[in-house]
Length: 226
Ligand code: ADP
Ligand code: ADP
Image (cartoon, rainbow, N blue to C red):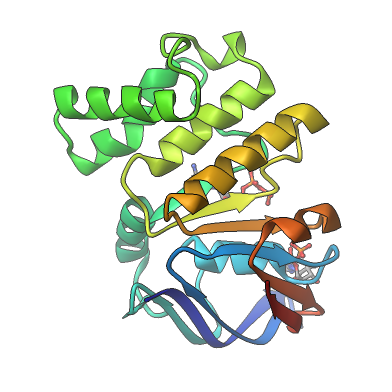
């Protein structure tokens, strides 16, 4: 079962009269249950790939399929809908809302989707327990450590049962112990069947994946299955 596919994707940014080719014909497939690491040096096209996988941007040419649906030509409104329903985001900077509690942060994507209060509150609690934060549900982000904030973010990413988790340098702002704990959570989620995609410049994360994609100069330099 293919959850994501890029087919001959090119992305060109216009800078005045200069064309910057960020992606130069990228094709890959991600199957359900894979743990994917997308790696490459600065400028290789990681952020551009992440934005396209997250329905935050569209390719200049080529096709992008999420659960078999071609999203490469959808308008912004349709893309936003798919983003909210199919993709669980985890960011380097956590991106939690500071005025909301951990519980409310996790509830938010379900609220946007129209899940009734009681149901979403119950699920948010369960998800926070799943990431080991059952005793912190009423804490605000400032009352939590970086590792705890990232765990709230993971719980939030899971809220709407996404097709895949898309994590952008998820350990980039954490000390090494907290970073390892976060990677353990991703491993456990993946073992339970969740498709996880981590985009990183950190070569140490390579060993985590069972499907590793190396980008260089907007092309796939190497693709490896472990
Ligand atoms: P990475 O995340 O691996 O550093 P990016 O996808 O950010 O790579 O960038 C790939 C190439 O596209 C780089 O040459 C970068 O300078 C260029 N680029 C990225 N975003 C933009 C943009 N918004 N406008 C112009 N050029 C961009
Ligand atoms: P970067 O790694 O490019 O410095 P971030 O990790 O904060 O930036 O986020 C990656 C991209 O996702 C950003 O370009 C931003 O536009 C987008 N983004 C950030 N927060 C959200 C959000 N809550 N929902 C959708 N897109 C977001």
